[in-house]
Length: 95
Image 1 (spheres, rainbow, N blue to C red):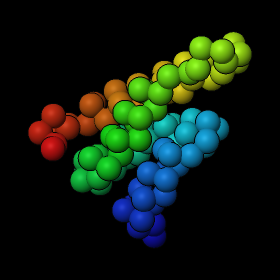
Image 2 (image 1 turned 90 degrees about the vertical axis):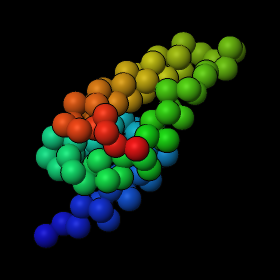
Image 3 (image 1 turned 45 degrees about the vertical axis):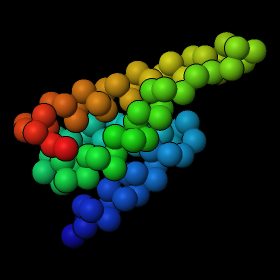
Image 4 (image 1 turned 180 degrees about the vertical axis):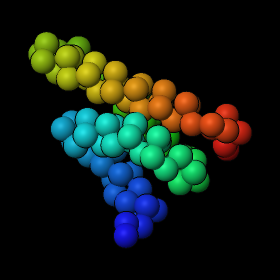
């Protein structure tokens, strides 16, 4: 049996990793919010900070177009994860 809280600590690490890992972690977070919403709500304060950091990241002005596209993809995926977190019942009552 999987210890969900230990798994969520790895998810948290994935949210701070490189582009490819972040994308996969956002997808996992969307899925986990429907599979085990109570566990997610207990750890939501820890999960929100890396999401906020991703959404606030700016690409340097002299970057290539690919960098802008990758950042836009990351932001869209992060927003999907935020929407999934907000869709959890009683998520508005969480700290």
